[in-house]
Length: 143
Image (cartoon, rainbow, N blue to C red; front, side, top):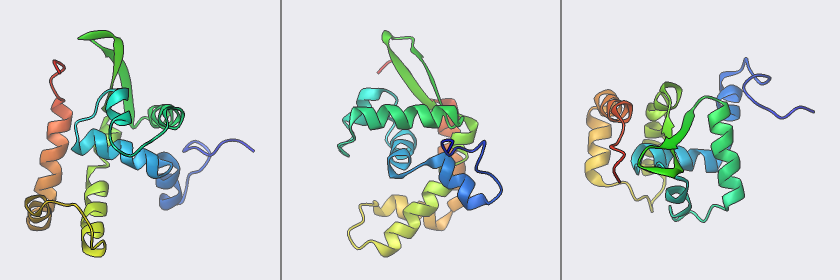
């Protein structure tokens, strides 16, 4: 049987999204790209989730094949690559914000800062748009 991907698992919107996103590791990579400013392989390894390097490599490749992220050479360090969200990836910001809001409601041990939660609650569309715009502009590559 062929590996499931968005090319052969389409039709049902939930199935399609689950296929593109893959699993919890892919969601955590997206979290790190969106909310933590991670851009390099080492940033994800050091993220505290204890992801193995082979799983990380696989999920980064899967997200790249699905068009959610891009990979390019870091102009500041020739031996490193930079991972960035594509437009398709940036469009996932509202989805992840909805997951944050849901988790904050149902996880008594959530770590969502009050100011973040208030901005998300009070003006969710503007909050998502601001995050998406900052991602589109991209971080400076000096770090």
